[in-house]
Amino acid sequence: MFDLVHEMRARIMTCDCFDSERVLGAILFEDTMEREVNGKSTANYLWEDKNIVPFLKVDKGLAEQMSGVQVMKPIPNLDLLLDKAKNYPVFGTKMRSVIYEPNVDGIELVVQQQFDVAKQIISKGLMLSSSQRSILIALKSMNVSYC
Image 1 (spheres, rainbow, N blue to C red):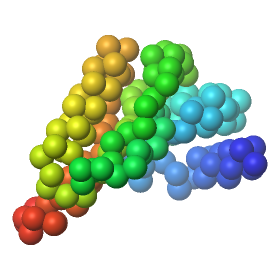
Image 2: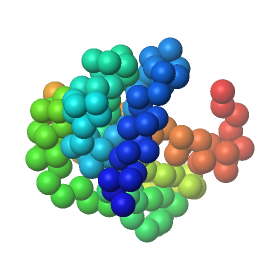
Image 3: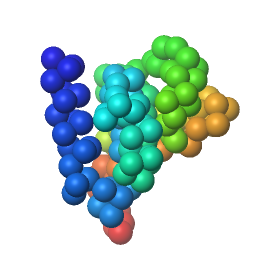
Image 4: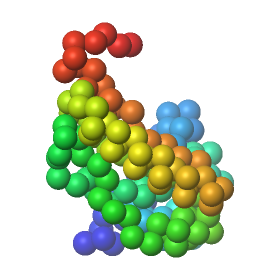
């Protein structure tokens, strides 16, 4: 099944319309990062042939909701994954949490976890990207206007 999924992704990436005029960065799953497109690692193909910045999704999904938030599930072997990502090479990482309610305790959990993981990512020389869409859910529930 993963082979078919990668073939589909490779068809999208090799399409002429998939270029840096339309796409700035691509988030790769670990399996996709470890595969090739046109004889190159996926990350190298994206950067060298398409001028698209490759990012690696490092979170392993979300834990059950508590205190109005969902933090990330534990990320086993994160250091090994980050070392592997640098060798492909991947520019940075992507991770996310979700904030559903303006709950101070829950938001503190999210922020603490995001900073803890960010320190690991930065220590490996990679750029990090943390989803900010999650905060908009809380802002909506508080009837706060945002751009």
